[in-house]
Image (cartoon, rainbow, N blue to C red; front, top):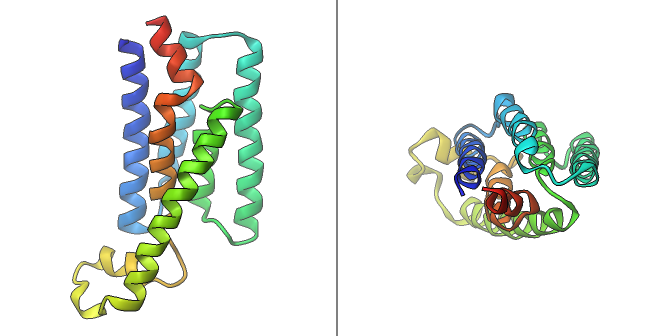
Length: 169
């Protein structure tokens, strides 16, 4: 149980930091994605379930990295978002990835509706904080790190790696 808690704490810290920084500055620091990726490689020996499972984690992570690269190259996703999405995906098996994509998409839709509503109906004069003004009124960017963090935090307790950590503890 302790290992499961430690995994949860490290992962949640990284995701909360990404969400906070993305909301505040519209950037996700590289160190956050690196920490989440390195966290996976630190944790995996403790929850080892075999080479096949490890290979699946690597396949999922690399596939999402390539997909994120394409989205970034097309201008549909920011670089920080693509890196965070890829680093997070190393923690998943294929069924976990489906949950992650589902939760992230739903959260992204809610955030997009909120921001679009704010852009249309909230007067700029009441947005006194720079970060809030940037969050609502910047018509070129959206902090998708918030959705990625939500999707990851909801997926983690249901993920194979977390279940293995809880079982082995």
